[in-house]
Length: 186
Image 1: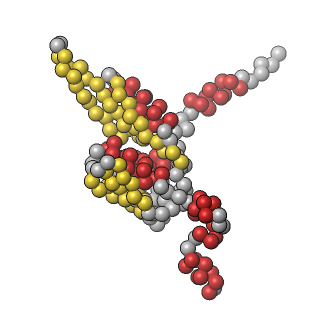
Image 2: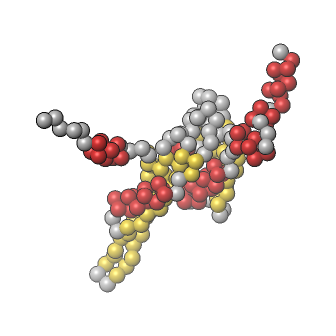
Image 3: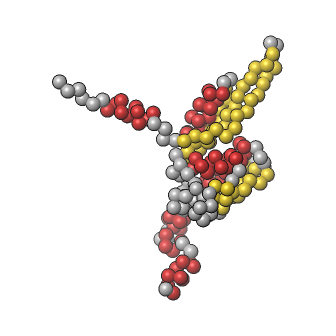
């Protein structure tokens, strides 16, 4: 008698395979002085993404580092946003993001440029799947504020299809007039 394949076991293995990559950005150790000495706690900042246009970040606090990272990863997966990418490698247009005193400027880049960005911003772009971008952080160097400002700027990102749909036009009408005149002359 042949045994039927167990589909449930295969599904569990697929779920166990990591669909999201995660990057630990910062760990902060804090201490509380008590009668017997000091009690330490840890806060972790994690960026999670599928490297295909989805990214999120999360914070987690716990008495142990692994538990703080686990909490941060779970929160990041719940707070993911989708960002439209041009050709799956760069942003559609230049944008700015802001959070508190932190301000970031993100610019599109030609193929082969790579990710030119500082620490926490680099983690966001790598998890998002961006391959070519130039970014600059102005103001706050706090990793929490830098990531929040980067996510704020990425939320403003719009593809030509989204703009065309909002305006009730065709994508060809939205794209540059220069491209249209060059093709008309040729």
